[in-house]
Amino acid sequence: MWTAFVKKRADIEQLMQSPTPSSSLVIQALQIELIKIHDVDNVKLSSCNKCLYMKPSTILFMLELEQCIEHVYCELCQYTNGVSEKFKYFVTYLRQNGINNKCDAISILRKIYDKNLYIECELIVYAVDNIVYNALHEE
View: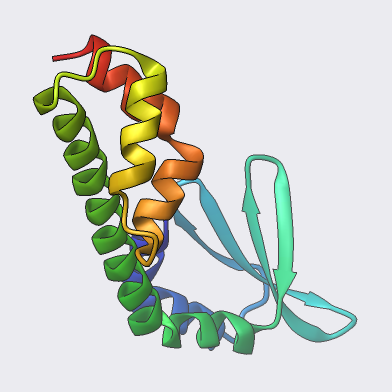
């Protein structure tokens, strides 16, 4: 939704500057309307029978955050790839070392993970059951 919102940036900016109340724009399932409440311009965002009201300046500010959001998205993608690679590493390590039961697998994982790496710590805490299952059951 965010990328579609940003792609319509020019249309949104034009709508925010529209002198005509009740002007609107639809982006996928999101309807954006310029309305007046007590003679003050407001933006009504509607989707799935829910709505949110904002000032036009807030909508324009959100568009200024495009680069920040893209940066955070790229970091999230890198983090996700890192998690996937570490998960695969742990599964492969257990398979290559012939571990065939859960207790031994957990014991080995606790010995080999790097306690200074955030991703490895989180995987050991939150995904150890999945790692062990994949190592013992899936090829």
